[in-house]
Length: 371
Length: 164
Image 1: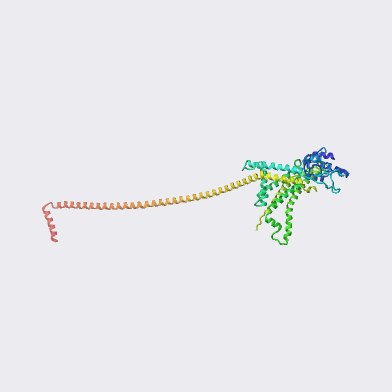
Image 2: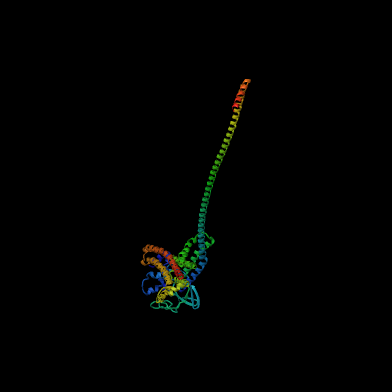
């Protein structure tokens, strides 16, 4: 079975990176599985959850049962200052078995989270103290600002965005007053779309100063969504499906909305006009919560949509391994193709919705009352 | 659950990346692109507006032209009318003058004819009178050729006188 799996991984080399770390994961769990005396079975849920989550080191594919991955810098802000070492020093270990000594301190990687290592290994061989039931790690953690897979993908997408728009902008400077050509011809309709249909229509007369932010937001989300759909390096990372990323974006929306809220906006929140006084405090509570639920919904929507897309694609690809036959692959490939095309739409749609709602919230906060 | 717990590192890097991206794009991409787009829009709008203006001007010119043409036509019409009237008047005047002249000439001719006639008449009268005198002389000579005839004559004359 393991042979045929390696074989298939070779066959699906292009897709295999989305299935990354399946072997590493399986290996890492070998001890556990041995203890439970079960035959090592392919666990799609685990593979998928592993893919969706972030990791130190960028797994590309497996070769001769060995995971091949790009080592990424681990950057930790510890009690004794900044510590930097390569993620390869963990030797693909994410179970806390391998202790890395750096900067006079000892660290372990448990499920891609870095802890200060314990002196002694526990009964599972991990240098950490874990709860017997929940396996929750109680070790202290340093501030982890490593270049993880998602951070690397994020930086790559930022590079793509810059390489897309800076040359386009240069074209305008070089040949002013002519119709856009090349990249600019592709970029301009989108820029105009964001400016007119998202910013101008929803924010109102003072839309101009929000356009750069909305443009950046739109293309940041869109390009990251799209790169997440690319099944091989340097795509395939689940950046916009990571709650930390969507949280930052939603937080920006939250800050911009409330900083620009005018008298009417706050008036409508804390003392809704045209209502009996008895109802007003009650509504104030509801409206106050609403300030937070709006960006919160943005955060969850983007995270859930993109993560769901990745899960569906990976599940369909995993069908081959679940049924343990190559004959399911036509169905698997066709379904993956169908969902991937759908995800292309979702990638653009989610970028649009996030930006549109941000513009809408800002517009509502700046809305002047008309009597 | 790991996937719904935001990681500190990714928050840090996302924030940093987003704001660097925002800064770079705002300064080097959005600003020139938006400016170019806006400039082009304004250029197109002003071009459209000037085209519209030109059209309106053209229309006003055309209506002006038409007015001028109409005016010119009217003027020409008036001039023609005037000329026609002048001609008619001239003809009428000429006609009047001519007939007057003719009348005058006629009158003069008539007067002349009358005078000529009168002169001729006088001439004829004189001729006749001369003729009569001549005849009478001849007759008298013939009659008074001898003394006897003269004496008879005187007698007759005397007789006439005595009767008176």
